[in-house]
Picture 1 (cartoon, rainbow, N blue to C red):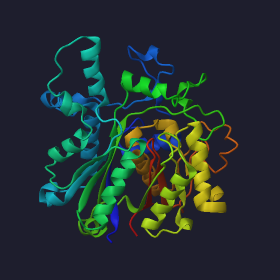
Picture 2 (cartoon, one colour):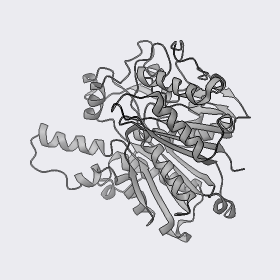
Picture 3 (cartoon, helix red, strand yellow):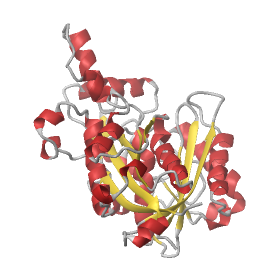
Length: 411
C-alpha cells in the first residue's frame, strides 16, 4: 500500500482565507461567531453564524458567476489555493489519474432557497435558467474538475456532517490502492439561507445566544452548552502518493495514516457510543496504528447535549484509562459548524497545529459537564512539540461516522 502525503491545503473559512491566518485565529481562540445582520435575522431565535469574508466578484467573471452557487464559489477558490500551495504542474500530469472528491451536506442551499422564494413568495412562473446547475449537490466537485481539466474520478459525498471526512477518506483509499496518483479532496458548505437556518432551528440543535458575548455562544463539552452555531466555508486538500511527492520536491504538510467508517443504525439523529467508537477503531485498524500512537484528538465537539457526552464516552471506550491523558480539541467553538465541510477544515487546522507543536484550545469552556471529564485543552492553546499524530472525528445525522488519522510530515 502506498503512503499518502498532504501537499497542499486551501481554506476559505470563518477564521481566515489561508492556512496561516485560520491557524493563528484558532490558536488565539478568536471566535468568528457573530450576530448576523440580514433582512430576516430578527425572525431567528438566535441570529448567529460564522461567516467568511469573501467577495466572489474578485475571483470570477460575471458570466461564470451566474452559474455558481456560493458553495461552488468557495470550493473552487479553496481548490485553487491548495493546488498552488502544492506546486502542482497539472498540465504535465496524467489528468486521467487525478481525482476530485468533495463532501457537502446541503449543496446549493442558497440557490435552492432563492428559487423557492421566486416561486412561492413572489409568484414567478419561471425559474432562473441555471437553477439546476447552481443547486445540484455535485456542482462544487464538477466545477473543480472543469477548471483544471481533470478527467479522473469526480465524486461527491453527502453524508451530512461527515461528508468531507468521507470524501478525504475515500480519496485516501483509492490513492493507497494505486488507482489514482493525485486527489483534490475536502468539503464545501454555504448553508446560511433563511430557509436552511429556520430548518436547523426547528430541530432544536442551534445554540442560544450568550447574553454576555454572542461570539461565545458555542460551548463544546460545557455544562451550559446549548447547541451548535452554523458556519460556511470550504477546505480542500491535495493528496498524493508519498514517493511521487518526494520525487517532485513537493512541500509535505502531513501524512494520512488511517480512515474508519461505522454507522449508527438505531436513530437518524441520535449518536451512539458504539458507532463512534467503532469508527475510531476502524481508523486505527485501517493503518495498523496502535491506540497509544495517538497524541491528540480533534473532536467532532458540536456543543450539543447529545453529541458531547456520547463522544466523551466513545473516546474512553477506545482509549481506556489513557483517554484522560490525550488532549482533545473542539474548534467548532470558534469557527462554527460547517456541516459537510467541517471534517476537512478541522483536519487541516489539526495538521497545521501539529506542525507548529501546538494543541488548539476548546474555547468557552468555563465549567465542564459532569460527564465530559477529559482534557479538552480549555480556553488556551498549549505547546506540545512532541505531538505528532492526530485523530480527527466527524459524526453525522443519518449515522455515518467518519474518522481520519494523520501525522505531521512524512517520515
